[in-house]
Length: 447
Ligand code: PA5
Image (cartoon, rainbow, N blue to C red; front, side, top):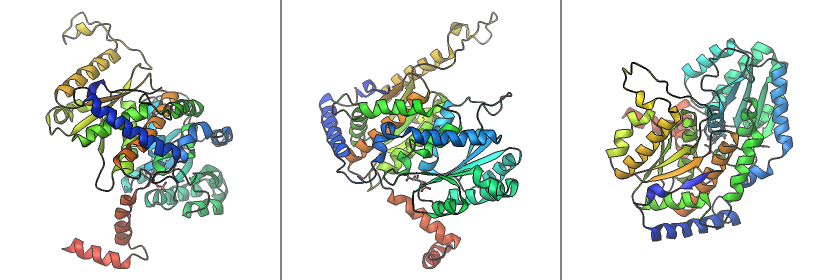
C-alpha cells in the first residue's frame, strides 16, 4: 500500500487552499473515471492490474522456460522511453546490487538493455558481452518505427542470426508491439517471431503493466503476480471519490505548490535501488504534463549520495523546488555498525545501530532542513521494496499523473513535442521525404 503524507507541506499552504485543490483533483478524477477528458482513448492502463489475464503471464513464463532450456544467460531488452524505463526500474529495484559480479549459479538470465540511446560505443561494447554469452532478445516498440530501438535491433538481430542460424534466431527473438501497425509488427510476422501485443488504448509511459514490463520482469525471475496484486490494491484505493484517495492528495498538493511558484519537483529516494523509479517517473510526468507552455519540471535525486552534489542548491538556491520523497520503511537486509575499541574514527556512538537507522535519521534531518530552507516536502511511502509495493507505486503514480494533468488543464496522454527532434534528425540523416527540411536545417547550421 502506498501512503501519502503531506505534513511537510503544512507550513507552505493554507488548509483552505488545499481543500480547494482537493476539489479540483476530485473533479479531475471524475473526468478520468467517466472517460470524458482529453486523450480518453488512452485509458486502457486504468484497469490493467485487475484485467490482465493469467494466460498472458503464462505465455511470458513459457518464453522464460524455453530460453532456460536453451541455456540462455543474457537477454537483451531493446526499447526506449515507455518501452524501456518501467522494466529497467523494476529489475534494478528488485535485483541484488551486484548480481552480475557474484559467483555461483544464477537463477535467471542477466537482463541488459539496448535501443535507449544512439551510442556506437554502447552497442559495440554490448556486442562484446554478447559474444561471451548465450543470448536471446526482446524487442519492444509500440509504434514499431522508433529509430533508436530499430537501429539496435537490426544489429542484434544480425548477430543472433549469424551466431545461431536464422531458424534458431526466430526462437530467440520475441517482439512486443502493436497488434497491426508498424515496421516491427510486419517484420515479426515475416520472421515468425512470437509476438506480444501492446493494446491501442495504452500509451508508452503507462505501459509498464502490459507485456512491455511484464515480459522482461518475468524473464528476470521476479513475481509479476505480486506486482499486479499491489497495483490492484492501488487501483481500488485510487478510484475512491474522497480526499483520502492518495492519488487525489498527491495531485492536489503538487498543483497547489506549482501555482504557488514551486515549478520544479524532485523525486527523492534514499535507496539506490530506486534510482530508476526516478527515471520512470520523470518520463511519466514530463511527457504527460509538459505541454502548452505549462507543467512542473520533474527531476530526480538519490540521497544521501546527491546531498553531496545537489544538496547545496536544494537547501539554498532559487526557491522554486518542491520535493517528493519515496520513503521505504524497512530494509530487506540487516546490518549493524560494529564496535571498534580504538574508536579512531569517533564513530562508536553509532555502535549497534542499523545502517538503515542512520539512513532514516538522514532522511528526517534532511526533511526538517529542507522545510526550513523553503522546500515543501510530500512523502510517498511503502513498507519495503518488493514486487507488491513496486506495482502499487507504478499504479499510484500513473493515476495521480492522469488526475494531476487534468487539474493542470493539459491532455496527459499525448506527446506532440517529442516529434520535433525526430523530424530534424531524419532530415539531417537523409531520410527520403525530408529533402526540403534538410536544406533548411543545413542552412541554419552553417550560419
Ligand atoms: O510514452 C510514450 O509514448 C513514449 O515515450 C514512447 O514510449 C517512446 O517514444 C517509445 O515509443 P515506441 O514504443 O513506439 O518505440
